[in-house]
Length: 109
Image (cartoon, rainbow, N blue to C red; front, side, top):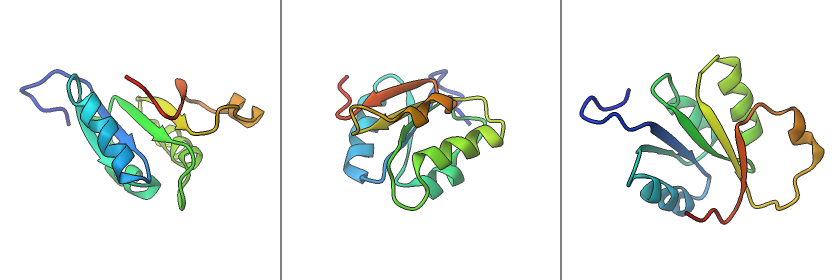
């Protein structure tokens, strides 16, 4: 749930590299409430109706970003999802995926 003292949207930053997730959360923390998850399973445990945006690493061991995205949509959670990947030229498999934006690493502010 978003802190009642702040009306800032809540962003869940998900990346299996803790340093990367922490940097994104720090940068976003200037304008948004942020939470971090260091993998897909942790993200699925953390996400609920209070999350407005998920910044989601696509390639993670265990539960991939693709699987996390599918579970978010299956749960009917009304949040925006931004997929983040180091792959500059994604395959056509992303065309049917229900995300709101797609960014390539490194993401710059």
